Amino acid sequence: MIDTIKDKTNFEPLVANLPSKLPILIEEPEKYLDEIGLDQSIFNSDIIVSYSLHPDITTAIAKIASQRNVKSLIIPGGYSHVSMDELEKIAKNSNMHIEIDEICCALKEHESTKEL
Figure 1 (cartoon, one colour):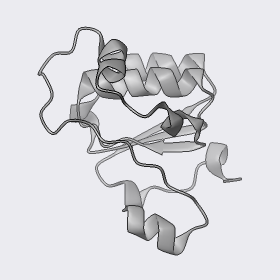
Figure 2: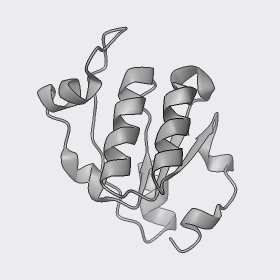
Figure 3: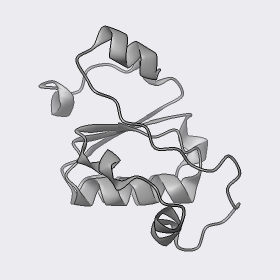
């Protein structure tokens, strides 16, 4: 996906990796992201595509992204990897558009990201 973005757009993708094995339940996911040294510069982006595939981590990424004025969060992998109640609350309380889909390449243009 990174190569496609580089080849087909004028975006400059940033990548932040997570450990390959994550705990099943993460009590304090934002603290956990600090502890593993997640590169916070990713939150200086207009759009984030999160492949965390972990409900606690995805919610923490959404919270931080909304606080840092990210315009759109795209979550591939479908609804089984997210906490819908939490994400709906985050989207409602911020101006960030959150899109969840099995395949992010099939997403249609959204008004909030049209300018990007």
